[in-house]
Length: 387
Image (tube, rainbow, N blue to C red):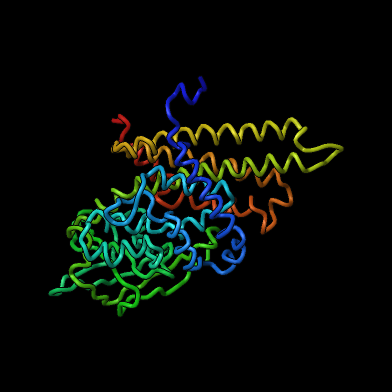
């Protein structure tokens, strides 16, 4: 009996998910990897990539069949994990799968016009969407958003500014968080705002250290009028809608961070085997072998924990502190690995166009986005008996 059989079924490598991994690798090799450098320079993805991903069912994984999706959370995570292991930049995934953070509230609402006009076309790759929460003065502090929405007859009127919005420059519609009352976190609501709505503009495309192939925008809303039925869910319930989706967003980032670490371990192993110095391959140097062992150890430990938490999430457990721990564990491991991968590559690791250099830059956002490292620790602290 193998160790896997002794533990039970490996939910990440069932026959169906092994086939899914092969599909992802073939998709990456054909549709993404030949174009990465151009997309990094252009700062955005082509819309055809969304359609291509939809044609083979990648966009709908992890969403209900009732809205055009299929599969489970782990299927969705396997796609991003395998893509990173194949060499796909995480910035590509951030932009290609932005619907993973922009659509959940619409799906939970479930009204026919939202499914027909927004959810199904997005999962078919015909529309690009974004989630707009962060503001210049309110990032992770959702309770202090300043963008306002005021009811005026059969419409809501929105005013405010959003920043650091992934896919915001290309988005056909944006799920916008706005203040509908003055009661702190209990006064937030979500709205669907269409591109081209008078007063709604992407005022700036932001230039970033990493995630270069993912467009990131600053959005302006000035007297933007949206129909009353573009309120998503109930009024003043937006904070809870946002909190509900944070767990899936954070576990997705955790899985990608572990995959990036593993990819950099693999790249580094290949490099030290091929690179010769002082009369032999670098792999024969004990100090470098031990460095690789430490990179591998941290990656394996983080991956095991993150996968276990993802499995429990899929099984319906309401995990908050555990997800925060998974994210910090994954980003710590990834930060250690990418830094050492660049060091092991020497001068080549410092050169633009080298994959480990790109991962080094892309890695920095993981302990910021989806809740900073420090905020994750605050979340965890709330579940500790400190008083």
